[in-house]
Amino acid sequence: MIRAAKNLEALKGRLGIDWHDEGLFALALTHGSYAYENRQAGPGDNQRLEFLGDAVLELVVSDYMYKTYPHFSEGELTKLRAAVVCEPSLARVARELGLGPCLLMGRGEERSGGRERPSILADALEAILGAIYLDQGLEKAGEIAVALLTPVIEDVLEGRSDRDYKTELQEAVQQNNGGQVHYIILKEEGPDHDKIFTAGVVYKNKIIGTGAGRSKKESEQQAAREALSRVPAP
Image (tube, rainbow, N blue to C red; front, side, top):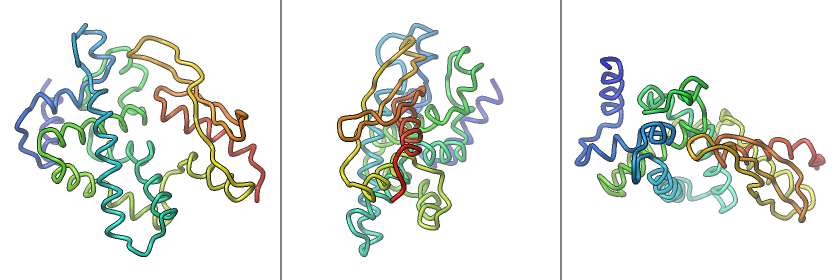
């Protein structure tokens, strides 16, 4: 308990926020497996905050990039944003913040390595940003998001980022015959707190890759990874 409290205080210090509603902070750190095991009623986990934080993140990152890189085209901005807000990049920031040890998580999920799972870490970071938005407003949420992601942006521009298979696949398709790919969820298995998603990537009305993961984002990345091996080089 002492170690958990220290982890939480360290996280608060890194975020630099005086919370008006500490409950939002706690909710952002509550994984669905914990809410399930403890039979919490109502919005007992961070999924709704994650939904909100995802939208906040896309807006504030888009705004920052638009103002910071006026010489970038729409396509270049889109590519940069996709590489910055992808699951591997968000999970990296979450690790640097020390989010994993702070999460409230079910025993089964924890035993399976959930505190280090990229999808859980990325979702938790989005939930934190959603909570900051509700508690402090958009300006503060944007300020913190940009501060956290600036090293990632710099790494992406220097070619040092983790691979984003979805962006790579779209680029490969455009360099060949053009067009767009899109993703569908083919299957969902398991209880709400421990789902496995299977995604398919569709190009020209055909599924060219499938992948599985513990989040829709993770399964889509894995589907794109498989599809990349089937797209001919330009």
